[in-house]
Amino acid sequence: MNTATVWLRARSITIGSDWRVCEARIRRSGRRCCSSSPFLSSMAYEKELAAAKKAAALAARLCQKVQKALLQSDVHSKSDKSPVTVADYGSQALVSLILERELPSETFSLVAEEDSGDLRKESGQDTLKRITELVNDTLTGEGLNGFSSLTTNDVLKAIDNGKSDGGSVGRHWVLDPIDGTKGFVRGDQYAIALALLHDGKVVLGVLACPNLPLASIGSNQTHSSSNEVGCLFFAKVGDGSYMQALGGSTQTRVHVCDTDNPEEASFFESFEAAHSSHDLSSSIAEKLGVKAPPVRIDSQAKYGALSRGDGAIYLRFPHKGYREKIWDHAAGSIVVTEAGGICMDAAGNPLDFSKGKFLDVVSGIIVTNQKLMPSLLRAVKEALNEKASSL
Ligand SMILES: Nc1ncnc2c1ncn2[C@@H]1O[C@H](COP(=O)(O)O)[C@@H](OP(=O)(O)O)[C@H]1O
Ligand SMILES: [Mg+2]
Ligand SMILES: [Mg+2]
Ligand SMILES: [Mg+2]
Image 1 (cartoon, rainbow, N blue to C red):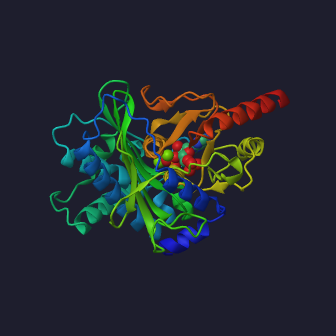
Image 2 (tube, rainbow, N blue to C red; image 1 turned 90 degrees about the horizontal axis):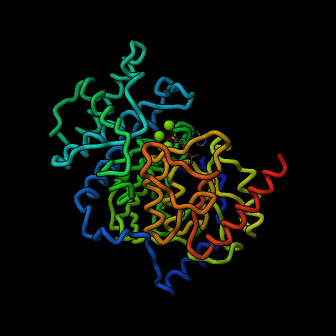
């Protein structure tokens, strides 16, 4: 199945003609805003961004190879019953190796989703061999022969580099090697999401979305004249958000949809109802006056699509008891905020990435532009109160 077919299979999506309206407004106003921290110059993090783009793009190659030929034996269950594949592990190993090689002077701290526990067991040996082959093949396929053929132990070590707990002091890389593993296994959307935290703030983020069309999803408006899929979004604090083709192209600056009219706004949510309450988001959308049906896609590709104005709102309301992790939002949040958007929890608090692996939020995460946020917050409050009183 080629990637275009993958995308078409993924579509349960409708984005109305509002994109055109948004685009026109943005062009007229020439406006952008960002949430940059004043202590950071836009010249900072140049080499870190270059390394992160290289690492994420290479990891995307590995994932594409696996998604094309995904075997049932490549998919495993973690202790929490969530899926993990050889590509999740391979992607994490590659990103860890590339960052270490490209940024040798750095005291390396990586907070990443996967660990090698299951691969060290007797039952994990075949999978470990397959991952090692994949990592070696991807490195040599890209002409990166600086790595002599890696052993299974090298790969285990690279995966376990991601064991840092993060925190509010110093620099920590944050990695989701495949965000949207369920989408990946289904043949749908997924993302490699890599961010850098500096003293608890996200200062750069890269999102590789191998199955996301370069053209705006659900409309004829294009960011590109081709039918190509595979987008690389990236942002550095104070420097705006950009998109380029994963295969390499000139970068274009992206902006969120700037509409203040909910009737022109469409919203994103998880494809998986188990990850986010579709009932609650539909109630919020109705209260806000959104007319378009939800756009359901997996992974932080939602943040990428939102950053370029494909839709205007992202709603995420996990079911009771679920704790969000920083790797599920760090890269996506800076890509959106540098494109002029805002990410908050359902109570209107900014997202706090400084508390370790978990991202403690009140009820859920909402993302939109500056103009719609006040009315979105009111609609969220109303819908949550209604839900509480019906229990
Ligand atoms: N019960 C749950 N509620 C909310 N999020 C969940 C969840 N179970 C898993 N997730 C998270 O949802 C992410 C995917 O988000 P989305 O629904 O936007 O595609 C998963 O990332 P991984 O696929 O990296 O494990 C996982 O971290
Ligand atoms: Mg994830
Ligand atoms: Mg993941
Ligand atoms: Mg996972």
